[in-house]
Length: 114
Length: 114
Picture 1 (cartoon, rainbow over the protein chains, first blue to last red):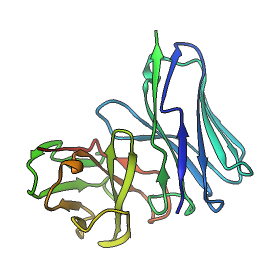
Picture 2 (cartoon, rainbow over the protein chains, first blue to last red; picture 1 turned 90 degrees about the vertical axis):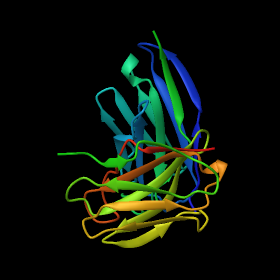
Picture 3 (tube, one colour; picture 1 turned 45 degrees about the vertical axis):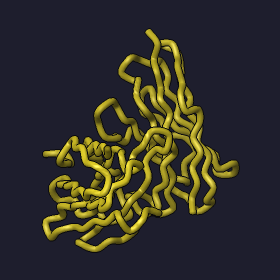
């Protein structure tokens, strides 16, 4: 089955700096890569996703890049703000979406230092 | 539109007991999936239901079971509780068919086994 590795497990950055979280996947059939953000006491929430026919996608301060050859994808957050502090999960799926075949990484705890 | 609702939010059980957790998906959503979240292990897939049928099951022992009702509400049951079952149990629903769409998570049921 799919295996998703996520690094780092904890990331501390100064407010205003950029943060990068990296994930690798093992199944070359994976074609959908969502990122979820989990704030304290809440369930994860989708913040951005990318499909395998796209190399990069941006949404304001958040961007995701995908390298299919190397089987890795990354989340980039620019101009970090205190509200970006949360746990971020990457995931990979070979079914194009939904829960079927969706495998999550173990998460990155992002800490924004004031 | 109400989000995914999970009950109870917190519960404490002792080893050997059983527990039932409930999940009400977003109105109109027909696919419900369950995840176990523990520190360091991320989100581990338990099972997914669509139209009252279990579509997929994760790598968990038979003590973990679930079901879905005709109104799409779902329950999961854990029998003969063990200390290692202490976790946050998250439910998610999707808007479209089983292989499409963003997962919408509830806030979870935090189970403590003493």
